[in-house]
Each structure stands twice: as C-alpha cells, then as structure tokens.
Image 1: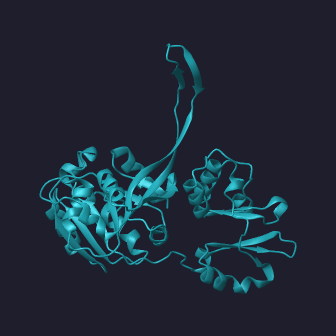
Image 2: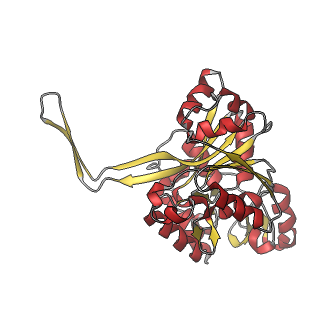
Image 3: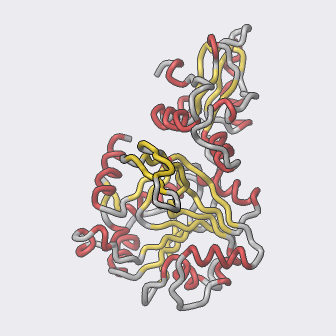
Length: 347
C-alpha cells in the first residue's frame, strides 16, 4: 500500500473518512498537505467525534488529532519501543522538514497494541434462531459453522485475544449439543453453562447468573462478530463510570426514494431526494457491571432495553462505544450469514 492511500483531505466528510479507514483496514489516516504531517485520524478520534453529537456530513478536519506522534526517520530503530510505550498502531517517520518518509505499523513490527482485559464473558446462546431456518432445525445457532469453525467459537476466540479465559453460555434450545461440542473441544479456556428453561430474553437470561458473577463482564449475543479492541472497550467503560456500555455500529443509510413531507393542510411542505440517515445501532455486545444483575426480576422475560431503563432509574450510567459499520458482522439472517462467511474468507 502506498502512503498516498492513507492520506486524507481535511475537507472531506467524516463519513467519507470512515469509509477510507474501512477500505485501508489499517486503522489510521494522516493529514499531510504537500507531504508535511499536520494531523492523524484513528478509530478512536472518530468515536470521540460521534459521541460529541456532531454530524457525519461535516468536514473531517474537526475530528483530526493535531498532535500526532512521530519520529525522525534517522531514529527508526527507536520506533518499536515508542509504539510499545505509547500503545499506538502506526508511527510516521519524518524528514527534518516534517514530510512523511515512511509509516511503520505495529503489525509489521510484531507489536500487539491491544489492551488486555481478562473479564468473564457471558454469551446468550439459547435462542431458537428462527431467522436461520432450516439450518437451526438441525443445529443450534451457536454451532452453525462460519468457515470450518462454529460462530460461538469465533466469538470466544476474539475475546481470548484480549485475555478472557472464563466463559458462561446461557443455553436452552438444543443445549446438549452445545455442551457436548465445547466439552469435547481441546481448549485453553473454561466454559460453564447456565440452563434457561424458558425464553427469558437477554435481560432475563442474565438473572440466572445472580450470585455467580461478582465482577465486570462482557455480554454478547451468539450471532455477531465485532472487529474491536475489547480491552479498549473495557477501558472506555471504566473511565465513563458506566454500569452498561453498549457497543454500537455507526450506520449510514440512504433512502432510495424521494421523500415528501406534508403540512397540516395536506400540502407539500418539503421534498427530499434520496435523503441519508446516520444513526447508531446496537451490535449485541456490552460491558456490564455485576450490580446490574440484581436489578432483574428472576424467572421473568426481560428485554435488554428494559434493563437499561432500570439502570437509569437507579442512578446508573448507560453509555455507547461506537464502532464503524464495517466492524460489525451479523449472521442473524441467511443472507447476512453468507456475507459473514465471505468476509472471513477474504480476511
């Protein structure tokens, strides 16, 4: 990849810059007019911009970090230690005039910049998976293969990458198949099972863990994959003093029709040609504080939205950790399952 591919135009929109970040897959862009480094844009900068409530159609210059880290090109030998010390994924090397001569990436230097977070992980693995019928007539959703590995194992492996070693599976439909698979699997992590005798929803399923979890934990559905630094999600959760942090994808949707708005007397008041919408959507991954479990009425179906309302009623905080749309893969429907398989094969 050429350096030109990771340079941004500060007048382009934040949304276009998000697309550029996704296309390059390197997690960083640089503002460098005439090659002179002026700023850097990362996923974290985008996240802070989104949380500030500003519009994605605005110029990205307002989201760029104007204090980028760098080294003189002759100090290349110090790059690995600097990236380790400052936990950064990319480091530009500059000449004495401030022009970018090279960019070093942590992956190429065998540096793991992911933050560690050895937290318990609760996976909701008991649903019927009706949208994936007829696959789920034979297999429970957590065991549907994506490539040669079941989706639940893909999810576990991503949490394992940041140090998680204890997993709780809330199981119901075809639960013995799930237990048999993981019990027979050679693994370097611990799995425990919680039997859900009737559908309780995500919130209600958590009530089955009352008295069993006493520390902050990750909560995930069993049909999604997130390309995110879960250690950073946890750090954000703690700094924000949240009781619940929901990982949300920034979605951009263009309505493929002209939209007509009417006034009270039935006359046309406004017309918009293919308007665009930007919004945050729940990916099904959360960080949760243990006291949240005590807010759930046992053996009562409870959607997670109700649980967030209860957190607020008790004075707790419920926040959002945004990720890009391309960071979220969902296999909830057959078409989405095929898309997930293709993306994993490409990676």
